[in-house]
Image (cartoon, rainbow, N blue to C red; front, top):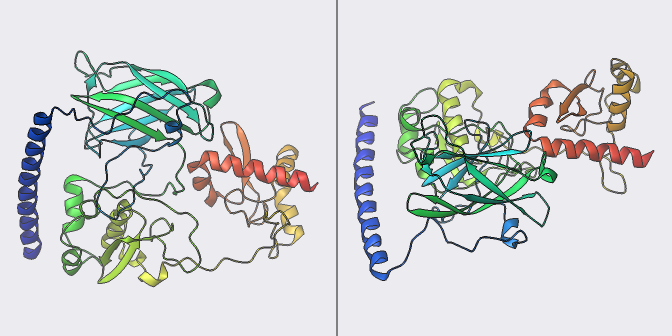
Length: 409
């Protein structure tokens, strides 16, 4: 433990030196900017986009580059209100975007620490909104809606109504001009799921993060702490924006937490062995597992995508029903537990929308679930969480399955 204290002391000294260096750099940069008369904004300014501006198709947050060699893409991490957290100005600020069922869009302003509310001047904000896949955007007004505790003339919330045609769909949003303090930012985001399972853990911060990484327990040792550079994953991979791949190829390394494709850049030593992950928050979770649930941590070579089971295909490439291990009688018996209407719907779907190689009825009576009033069926309760975590994709798969089976008929 004494080694850890020394490491913490060293880390604190490095942090102080780094902070002073950064402060000096920013001061010098400020003098240069003032001397040349250049106006600095939060990110590169561009004219307000028209409703048909091609920039609106980007659907991504404008951010400054992070560490060299690290990919950029904002991860869709759920915020306190269940919305999408958006970095603004290379994480100088954040916002949480929430789309309510009736089509109301709320934007909650947050600080560099996304758990802190941040007030900005009351101001007119124009947002350009389009349904995912559409080419034209519709301009909407985001009105300041101060929350309890906001200072006079300030607000920490903006509210607007998305176009009726986009209600219930994933949307792309661009705000060409948002003023925070003396800076102006161009912000964009999408509510579409980025192919990452909702089981991705939220990252830890502050004292909890320090305790997680700088104390040993279970399979996480003092030697591991030193081998990882006596730093946290968020510090080591600062600026990293994850690109999650839910469909890794057989033989590829997968993240031990989410089973998505692992990125060799996000590597961490645990129990003297190297593990690779999809993103820094998963390192947090795996370190916690290694300390609190060491028996659940497997060897690195165990986290490899297995070979896929062969499935027969139609001429159009769609999966056929695979019921080799289940007799028609067993499936018939399972489907008989449904009402006549539900059975007709299940038979039109035929397979689970999550585990599409599983015939409905092959694991007992199918589970009926609804999203936005649209019913569909799962092979078992184990698929419910994933189905609900990606509603647009789930409904699209259900519709495709029903259409394919209707065409066969």
